[in-house]
Length: 161
Image 1 (tube, rainbow, N blue to C red):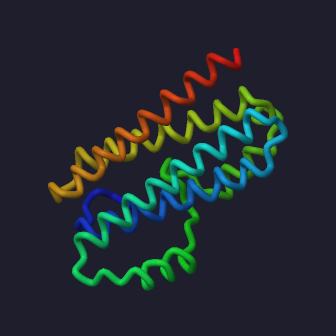
Image 2: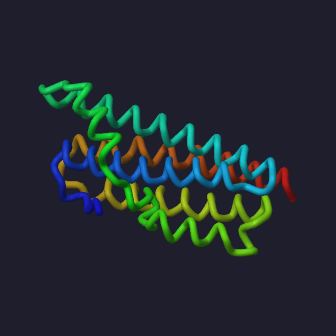
Image 3: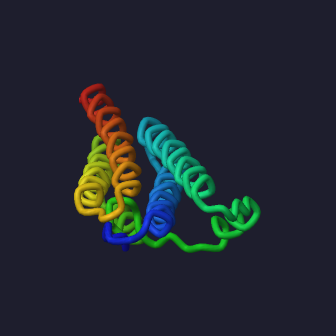
């Protein structure tokens, strides 16, 4: 798990893996969703997480002089991502989806809000504690993206109410 004490390249890899775990969870949740609105929401969040992964990959390859695109593609396919950007293991979130309180659209939005709020807090903590000034910039950008997710989910929650 990322601590904020990593150098920039290591921090980017760790952030990438967390985004990948979150992406995979949201994609799985979209497929399993009982309600159309929940499935659509999880699908949208999955696409956003994929964009985060692409952003982090771009940064990594821009910084690393070894811009081996094929190697990064292999890394993406082979590397496991057991944790989400919220710091919650993917398997724990998958178990939550089986609980009745998350079965409807409101419950799905609540779960997504929990994930995104924790992700924001993690990136905030990392940006404040990072010893690498470039890593701080990246983590602040990721915070901004998480704020957009939280705002989207709050609007969706209001629509569903």
